[in-house]
Amino acid sequence: MKKFEEIFVATNRWLLIAILSGMAILVFVNVCLRFFTNHSITWCDEVVRHLMIWLTFVGAGITLRHGSLTVIDNVQVMMSERNARRLRALSAIIMFAFFLMMIWVGKTYVERTMMQTTPSTRIAFGYIYLAMPIGFTLLIVHLLLVVRTYVTSGMSALQDDDGRPPVAA
Image 1 (spheres, one colour):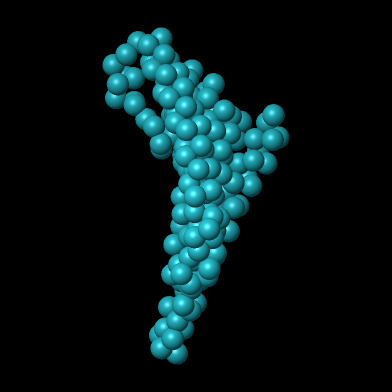
Image 2 (cartoon, helix red, strand yellow; image 1 turned 180 degrees about the horizontal axis):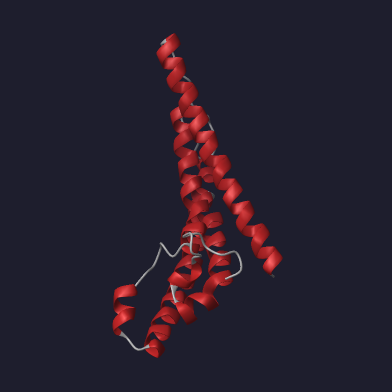
């Protein structure tokens, strides 16, 4: 299981790096073209916007591992350790239910927008909004991988000394 988690997290991080790199390259090239030739790539802004959507949903799982999505530390500090664990367990259940609901909502949204196309690239909007169910599926996997540590010790236990989440939580 530890090996799966290492590969899963590394793949997720590299996918984020690839998306962000693609966005940076496209914007850089487009700015250079505007500056030097007074012309730009007509589809660049649209593609970068769509990549940003994918970056947001694919990156949410890594954000969860950093403890940045749901933190109720102030309330937990005032509670006994037992009640704090209960609160974190309730929070994890609510997150899991919300993620499942959003997969269903995202799937419905993808189905409804599959026949609509983007103005410049003529890509079906469904492929762009596919980021939603995929991102929430990744969130569920990340949550399942860290839920025990989260419930027993809180989100701060999910981070190493350098602020990065440990692979084996």
